Length: 234
Image 1 (tube, rainbow, N blue to C red):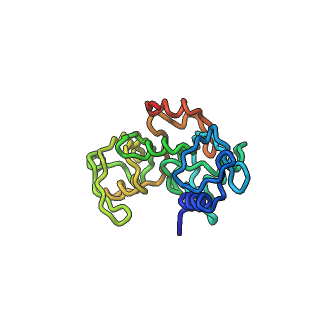
Image 2 (image 1 turned 90 degrees about the horizontal axis):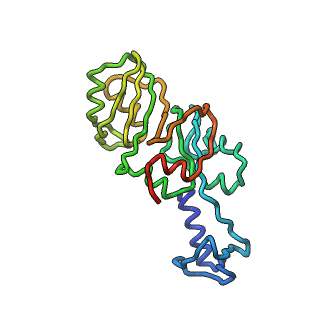
Image 3 (image 1 turned 60 degrees about the vertical axis):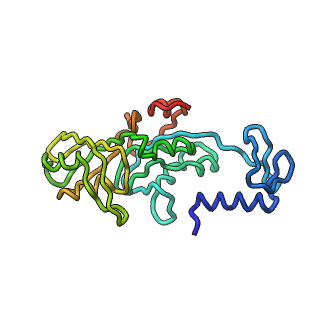
């Protein structure tokens, strides 16, 4: 079964091959045909295709919501319905760097594929900072082990975590900063040294932080706002 993204790509390719797409009123059957979406008139089944502007939002994700689409459970896309945007714009958004269902905090939502690729590339070494409350008191010796890197099993494969920084702020509370983001990584890291995460919240990604954004709230940013936080140049 194809994922939603690849299903859409497949449908577009089939529409072009079947002569259902026109560019400036000329039928196009070549899937490699070059056109300028900002200048050319593109239609499918004789209906104009509207281009969707690049959008950038941050959300303070509540616990209990999935970061991916689902017909069976609550997801962040249920929260996006409150935005005053056309349906096609909302549908174009996706979360960059998902948080698991039980984790709260900062999510970036965009339809900018370039930004997504940069943020998800481990070589970008963008720091993600989390606040965690642990079930047991912090053991400084075990914190040192985690900071140096530890071997975990993720998706049935062995994985060596990169060095990280952990700041102890209370008997059972820490801030942990990592430059990667494997599935349930922080929870697995503490489990590996005999502790468990009782509460987890992402507070920042690179230079972008939650600020005073309340749980469940969404804030729109400009392209300049968000790119400047990661010291990127176009």
